[in-house]
Image 1 (cartoon, one colour):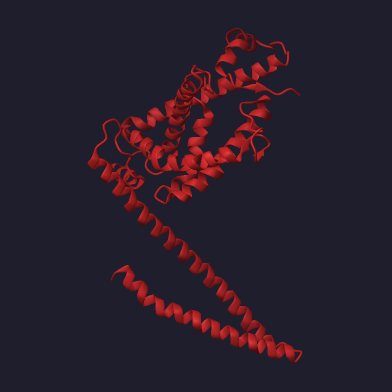
Image 2 (tube, rainbow, N blue to C red):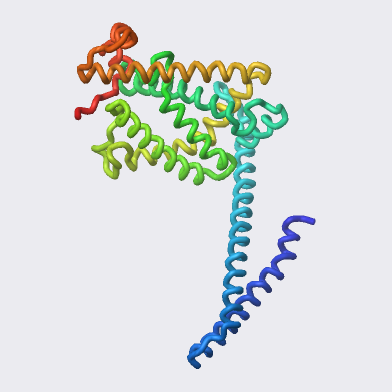
Length: 328
C-alpha cells in the first residue's frame, strides 16, 4: 500500500479524535462552570478533567514528534531530488577544471558500500576534517591576503607547517553541528552556521586573551558587536559559510578522504594526530614564553633560553603578525 493511501485511511480516525475531544472537553468544562456557579467542585469531575489534560499533553507530544518527522523527511526528499538533479545536469554539461560536487547522500552511499574507515561522522572522519581545515584555511586566507593587500602575510597558527587550529576547529565544529542537516534545505545550514560560527569565534578570542593576554581580531568598531569578539556582520558571514560548507566544501572534502585506503588510513591518522598534538603543545610553550618575555621576565631554564635564541620577538612577529598583546 502506498504511503499516501495509508495517510488517507488515517485521516478520518484522526479527525474523529479531534472532533470527539473538542466535544468532550467542552461538555466537561460546561459542567465545571455549573459546579462553580453552585459554589462547589466535584472531586470526580476534577479528576476526569486532569486525566483529559494529561492525555491531551501526551497526544500533543506524539503529534508534534510526528509533525517534525514528516516535515524532516519531506524536506530531505525534496532536497535530495533537487541536488541529484543539479548534479546530473552539471555532469551532462561537463566541467573543464572542477568536477561537480557530489550530493551528500551520494557520499553517504559510497561510504556505506566501501565500509570506509571514516564512514559517517566517526573519530577518523572528524580528525581528517580538522586536519584539512587547519591546512586549507591557511592556504585560502594567504591567497586572499595576496589578492587584497598585494603582499604575503603569514596566516599560520602553529610553528611547524602551514596550519592554524582556528580554521581546523571551525571546520570540525561546523561539520559536527551541520552534519545532520547535510541532506536538508539550505536554511538549516545558514542558521546552524550563524550560531556555531559565532560561538567558536567568541570562545577562541576569549581563550587567547585569557591564556596568552593577546588578541588577533577586534570588532569593536563594527555595529552590533559583543565585547569586540564577534559582530552581526561576521556572524552573517558564518551563516553563509554554513551553507557553503555543508553543501560544497564538506562533500568535496569527504570525496578526498574516501581516497585514503582503509589499510593505511587508521595508521596514518594516528601518526598525524601525534604530530598535531606535539605541534600544538610546542607552539603553546613558545607563545607563552613570548608573552613572558614581553613582560620583561628573563629565562629561568634551558628550554626558555633555547626558545629565546630560536624564536625571538622578530621571528614571532613574522609568524604571527596579527597577534597583539593587551596592556594590563
